[in-house]
Image (cartoon, rainbow, N blue to C red):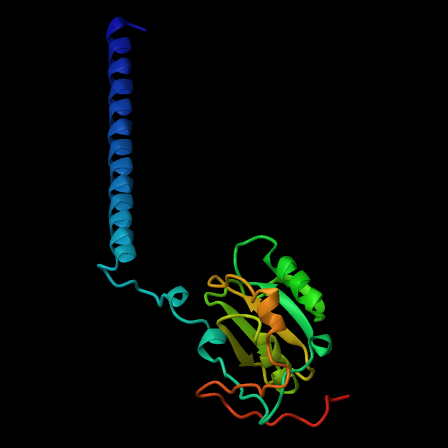
Amino acid sequence: MTATATDEAARQQALRRRRLQQRQTVIFGALIAVLLVVGLVAGLMWAGAVPAPFTRQFSSASPSEAQIVTPCPPEGATPVPFSEVLANVYNGTDRGGLAGETGQALGQLGVVVNQQANWPQGAYAEAVQIVVGPLGVAAGYSLARVFPGAVVSLDSSRGDETVDVVLGAKYDKMLAPDQIAALDPSAPLQAPAGCTPVEAPTQAPA
């Protein structure tokens, strides 16, 4: 091969290399520009300056929170003895061991603690939610007396007297033992404002 042919081949090779580099520069430049635009738009959406093209359901109330029904305790009902209350204790926070610790404290009061676990529905933002069925309303309100800030909610599909104690982010602690001992066992359970009357079956279904 002559020097001229060699030079021409080298020139063609350099030209192809330069064109390839130019194409790569254009492609990578376009990708970077797209990523910058996407990042900018995402940042504006996150800051609330631009509305997101989807519904932000994570910032709205969950169905369980939005549909809470607070049942009224039976008229004239007095507290159910702790030894007759069957409870599940659930941790609705990221604080480890909270359900076990609280379950143990309830057990010392005589409550029959069936289960201690994390709340299956995830995090609970309030203090304490006590979930009951129609048969467990009195038991739920009896247990609520030892939890400051507790709310009782109705699960109308529940057919037994089991009480679920859900501990949330605002939960601090139960009443002190001397405060619990001072609770009047004969004082009628108080109905909260706006509660819903519940017609409980006379007995649990077989």
